[in-house]
Length: 432
Ligand code: SF4
Ligand code: SF4
Image (cartoon, rainbow, N blue to C red; front, side, top):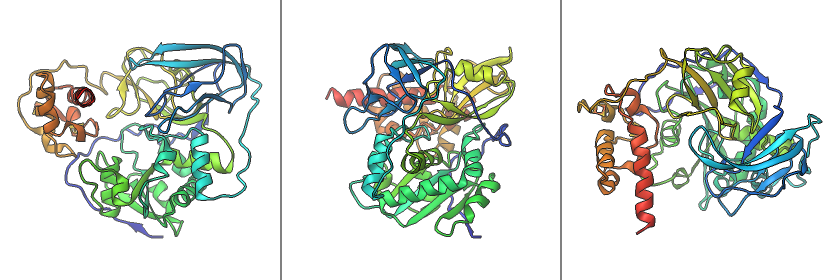
């Protein structure tokens, strides 16, 4: 068994793991009576509904078709009847079209046909057909990443799961090792690459051991350092390649895929299943019983929390995702999307509700920024409406890892400001 040491990047921080559900095996949560399936669960154009109100659908039936190159198909996660197709403003404040399906609990399922000739092209085609997107949170359509313009020579699998609380990838790596391995091999075949490396944080020795048995996968035991799971940092520490500012992993011959994404590729190619379920962690001290759950896409967050025994009265914040990169929900009209990785119910002891105070120019945010930015300046340019200088100071290179806000003693909402600055800069360029 050979386990490799990573290179180091000098910035970032060591943050408390709080992996409360590490020892909870993945449970299958029965699908709810009604699912609310968004047509915008990916980067790119929303999928176009191909069903009408009153239609009977099976689990695994196409209900919204991808529109254009950067988009993704959406499938029903239950069998039943389409009750409505409505715009819903979710707990993140996003107005999205949802296809609302009443479950008839007959579990009638539609699968794809077997692939007859398993070629790279047929794997890419199946990945697109199955509606697979980057399930680490990015939501970029995976088939596009599997068909890069230039040849690649290394596939990097992201098993870092460096966000506190989240344990779904860890559980999958230990419970579904063989299926993930097969998904990795299919992905490598699609990309025509021979070198495969998987980066797993060293605080997950069981997962490291599980993958170290494969001779054709190089396992790198990553230092526990946030944000180790960011694509550019992961590529550097596992391969030594630096992705220059403004460039993408394929520019240095690499493709990064997440654990859940390669598992979805295996299920689509070998089991003929479209993407209708995902695995999430439900955690935080505010939830009665934290769990790792396999859930139907479109399941209401409220029902998932109830399934875990409900939330305690001292829950002060509910987050979709991890505490660093996840987003706080303003209400619970939120439904599981392909890219979800967790639901956190946090108590006052686990999170800060303090109001921001003026910046004291301590420089801590800049000291730890893994992208070597100066978040305090970008924020102040943004607040002054000076988007040109926000761009000049590198706003577009921010990976929104949340470390600056996490470390800021004045509790400034730095990521929120930088994220809004990025949107303004994009708008500025669009309007010339
Ligand atoms: S500026 Fe962006 S990249 Fe740097 S710490 Fe803040 S969120 Fe992370
Ligand atoms: S960490 Fe906060 S207080 Fe310190 S310089 Fe950055 S924004 Fe200002």
